[in-house]
Image (cartoon, rainbow, N blue to C red; front, side, top):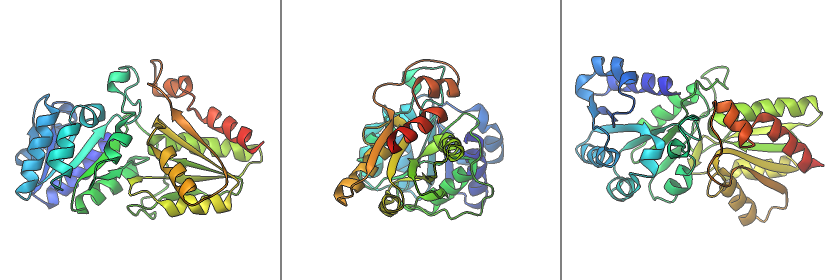
Length: 305
């Protein structure tokens, strides 16, 4: 996803001199080609994430379009006050890009896990939240962020995420979920790179005679209420799957729709109820924290039974 992001940003920078890439030291090497091509459209603020956000707000106030990039944990947690006061409160045209979504930095532990950013940032007015599932969707989100006048947060994985789309020609629209698979028994609602694991779980379910609908929520705010309502009509149960806390995330958003619409349906949330446990590869971390495709499949069958 990171490579897809930088490639998309390079294309925008070539078209518009107001596009500015900002980093806080993290990622300096992967920006080598960008920096060589666009030296006047690149700022390294050093390891000072809050200062980077304040600088981005100032640049936006002068007509620039800054894309401020670093590890999401250091943006959503350390720079939260600056995102709130300097960017969202002033409705500045700043694009905030947090990498390492979920536990994409599996060997670095909870300090680097980006698992509570959504509930923290979701509460901020004026902020558009985008959570791409794959490299192709990253490009869609970057272009959408550029076209959107106002604050945007994009959460990226950084673990060579596999592609879930066969081509770039699919119906991406901000605020609209994408139905990746149709099904009539159960709906699996997901976001981010774990969408790939959910698709694998749906394929396992199909082999067991269970028809699973898979919905990718690439826009967390505004949230697509209609796709949840449709799923409740078309299937018998809904499971939300997210590589982050279940408190305030996709599970909570889905539960809000179900409750407010007075829908009666079997429903459960899969995600973290605490800090992520363990160390290892990304796949090992999903196994340890009960977010593997096998666990998703088992929970779906248990719900239907």
